[in-house]
Length: 299
Length: 175
Image (cartoon, rainbow over all chains, first blue to last red; front, top):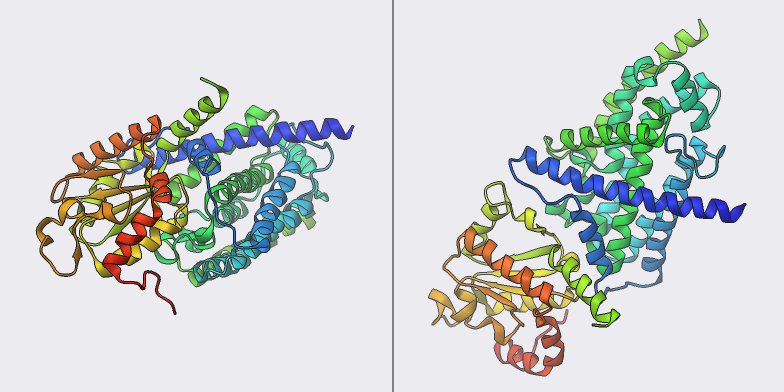
């Protein structure tokens, strides 16, 4: 039984890796076309990741530095196991939203621990910005997710998906909430208006500044897995998941490419501006959505 | 060909097509790089992208002359990079000093101090020349010919002697 779940989990991780890395390579091509360039080939991100894994030397900065990288990588992989992908879930019945949100923090905290362990001031600034921004996007996203969970009386993603397949999508039921969640997911991914934690021009790529060789390769894979989790959550909560895996993938690709296109047009917020933006607009619109939805629910 | 050589060959092909570049812009060379990176000449289609820190970079691009003060920083930067790593000398200043050949404070030949894999000649080289040079570097890496970093490790004594001659005995500043 356990062996079966292990094999399923491993296959799922490999599949998610191949899918997301080719998709993010394709998104580089999309950005290239927007800027009137050819752009790289779509398997460029595989080359980048494997190039870093094939490096002959890589510098370590102590035990905390190594351990944090593994904690981020392992925590993100463990989270990915709980996300249903269309009708496929690694452990059927174990797709709780609260578990996912709880485990997702492990990845970011491991990263924070490791980056601070490197002792580079740029890394500390980057991590403090990332955690500050987390305060911004988590709050509106969680309010919207709580409304969905309350109206369905369940926190299992499979139940939420099935209720949307039977009825209407949450995108149509609560459009304001979907917009807020979309922007929050862009903040989670660190896409363009919210990329102050990794700003390459001012703090030299932030938390990643001291990583080299294999460490950076592992963290790039971790970032791809985190992308699958966050965009997958949005598709499951608002676009009705998918009847099959293919259905899910098409919705996922549309959402991801839309985010890439939007982010390629926008400049960068300062970190206090992005938190202010999330709290001023995100929080107020999500509370309006809560009042409307709960009003209909109780009447 | 045994398995080890085959794996090394595959690794070299992957390395050649993904090059993160750290540009050390001292002089006028920086002017020709933005058009090479942006829409008109589009360096990214060859898999070359600019990077912010020496830890993540593969190529050290030295654009223009080096004074004795900046040479020290370039050596620090080079030693922070992770191998395999490559150095590209850019413009005639790195080859023979260029128009600053008789200045009291500049370095005339870069390859006395760092192992240069490829020179791109010109004052300054146009974006076409830069792209051409990088294509040459990619084919060198694929064949496994660009071994400047191994040369630096093997002949460390000779390089350190030259560096000390130019910079004085305080090669690493102590604070």
